[in-house]
Length: 132
Image (cartoon, rainbow, N blue to C red; front, top):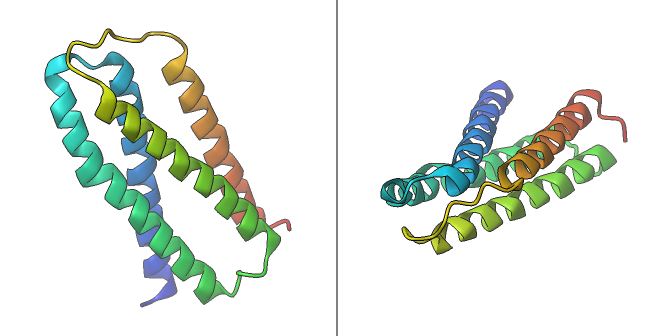
């Protein structure tokens, strides 16, 4: 497949994964009990497949670009591994959230979104500048 098409599909998958994860993440803290099942379905049908596609296409780009020996790629992979783990935490919280659970309004959504944003910003800088 053409490198440019793979890169475009990778970016679409990344945007879908991260925006969907942000929606689910905020939804855990703010959702009413009647929307939990829909959010669980959304997470399993949209967010998780987008994450898997992001990994698959990203690795395909790395192989095609010959970047497997580059330090910037391994730094990016470490950050994306953390984001994937964060998705697992978010999905687990969503699965454990029951309709009668109280709504949590602590700094939970804000902290997670900031961590996610800084992680993504770091990945973008690594990919664009390829410093290592």
